[in-house]
Length: 80
Image 1 (cartoon, rainbow, N blue to C red):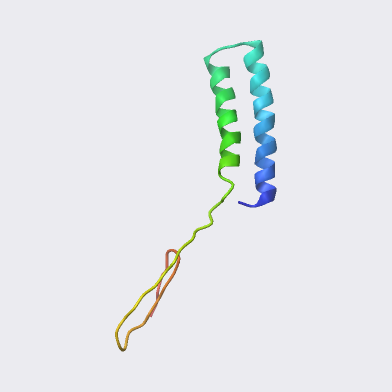
Image 2: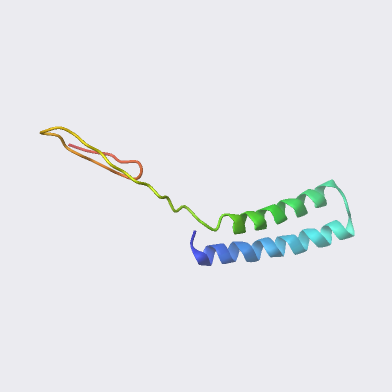
């Protein structure tokens, strides 16, 4: 994830936690408590997912004579 986008999401989660915290303080209940817990979980998940989508893929292949080899780390379409 781009660091600028992640920073923006962290700021938005902090704002949501503050708003939900004030809402929970003013009128404690199931709705305000659930919103507060959800905002906290979203913020924590942003920090736990710091690795991003980095994949450590090791690939190897073998084939016989007159073979074509195509190797990809993801989906691939081959047009002849």
